[in-house]
Image (tube, rainbow, N blue to C red; front, top):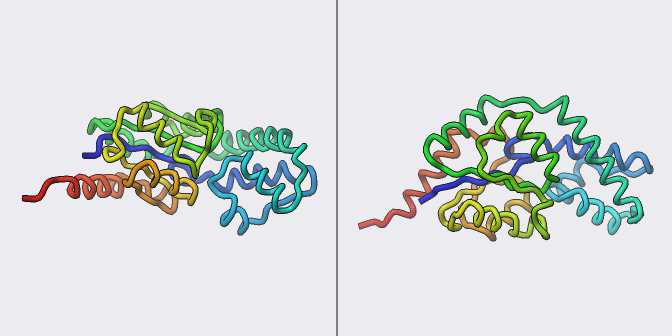
Length: 212
């Protein structure tokens, strides 16, 4: 039976994929580089900034000596965008409140850095509902490696079969599937509704019941 739900952040709880893209390109533009929108969607989406920069170096020769500075500037620009663009969501607040009232343990597992994750959750006014919050700074290997989800399961004291993971990006889905078979795939925050989450939980619980 499902006893807990773990959510990815970007693209699941908040529509921040574009924010990360804009912030990274703003930092890259300082040195005359740019990632095209279609490339970000098909190649870079869902990966930590450090990994994106490594890929960029492999693909177009972006100087590795600039990684640290560009990463730092990207995080600064991301925080600026969050501060002016991220707001509370009645839909998400209602969902989290309902899940907690029903006794579910809740977690967030994100490929973003901790300060960004915490800022977004606070700006959306839903931080209080989560029992654990994990960022890419809390693991050695980021998604698509399943380490972050395995760690979240351990911290929440959940067996893989007792948890539902909500994901959107290819790296995140790969990580989630390696950690548990119970994955709800969404196209964006508009699909993270009380109706759809509870429907997924109900379906999984029905499947796990012994049939006489």
